[in-house]
Image 1: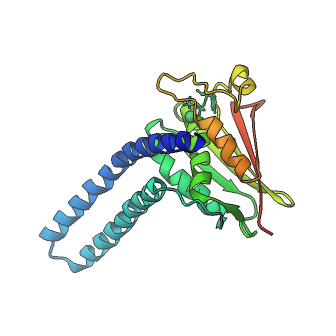
Image 2: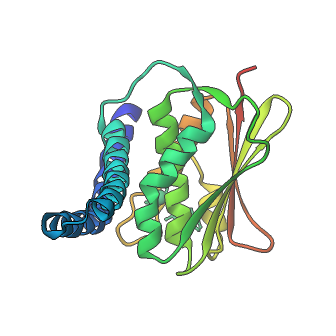
Image 3: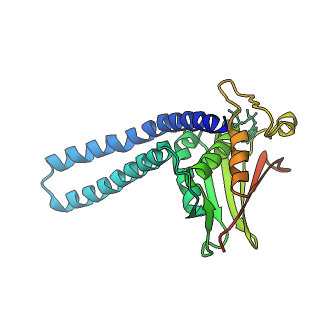
Length: 228
Ligand code: ADP
Ligand code: MG
């Protein structure tokens, strides 16, 4: 039963992300077309060289976006792997950026001590799905122009991830039923995101806590054990 709910959530999330990415890919494609035309007409090999470098960068960026989406769309890898948590968070931010940009919001990922061993034992796609759900909620709750902070801090044997937005804050009634019922306050919401995120995090021996931030909106805290 839970597997099919997870599958449903995953497909919905992938569909939404794909719509956002399609948008995000159109602009670089237009600029690639422009550069191709310029090269076609130009007789100056020096400027052509700099055009092609920009084009390669744009192509790599598009390729990266599509690759991330395909990874997520693939039937999930069930086994647990040691993976770099920051890489996982980075790819989640890349996937959600288009949705943030549409709202003129930005997702800031900040990490204390980049040098530590950041590996967590995880089912990478499931963990991504949990983070996507949680950060997507933060984007959806944000007013235009706001920053969504994703902060990573290492404590002794754990890593803490904070997701903080400036939205209205989460309703007490939702917190009350967290993990027990599907609740949504959104017109086209499913109420699946929080419940699944919680079960995914607990599958990873982690803890998920959601609270109202005193100064801002909602604060999500995720604690995961790190590989020693
Ligand atoms: P959905 O996003 O489809 O509504 P979720 O399970 O992800 O389902 O979230 C359930 C409800 O929890 C949302 O409808 C919303 O009311 C509330 N919620 C979740 N995250 C936040 C947040 N960051 N700020 C405010 N409310 C939130
Ligand atoms: Mg949601």
